[in-house]
Length: 289
Image 1 (cartoon, one colour):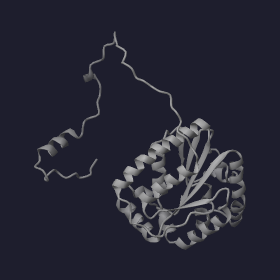
Image 2: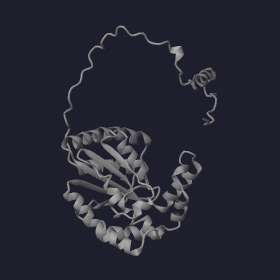
Image 3: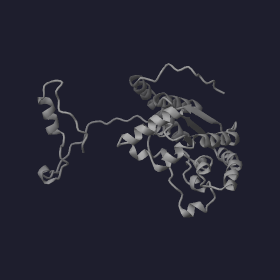
Image 4: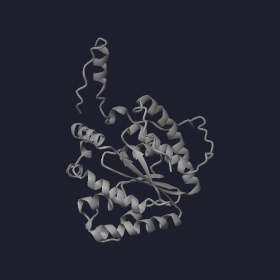
């Protein structure tokens, strides 16, 4: 088990983060090529408190990858039909085939977290899940699935800052809901639910890996590096491609461009105004659309 380093050198600088992220993107693409080449079936689960940084980590992992190989699954509220199914059924249909990587933005562990705390499942359903989950995950492993589980941890103080940021920022407002307001008052209940979940499902075959999420940039890099360390991969030699000269076209006359409807260049006038202003006195961007 990895030792926890409680001493931090401070939050990562953006410049260092972006430089390191570029390197990790290259390795993620190598991993993707290996998964495709070896027809591996990889599932990565991201769980944790609201605003702990799960979504940001998932976005960065998926960003350089082929969406046909790397799929992000973020299921909504179950339908009335799904509520009558075997609990794991709605998740099974999203599991990978050979050569695929699936990132679960929340997963079947909803039952051990939000459903338990908010009373969306019965006690019988909850305890049945905790008893059944390890067997379900062992079954996946026997079927050749590589299963990785991450829990993103965040302090109350940092979560509060992020909640306030979401409320004030119009581009993040959709991330904050009435459910978050209710959950905010149940910090201890969620802690107890997480502890109980770990007691049953933090096994040797499928351990939980805890990511310190208070520094978003640091947590993303740590998560990606750790994921790369868990799946041994090799650099797959790709077929060489040469473009060569373009073939000469003949017999084609392009229709007049004036007959086509182009999207207006909204920024040309803005740029001209910007260039004409004295340095340090450029017009302010009002953020309008």
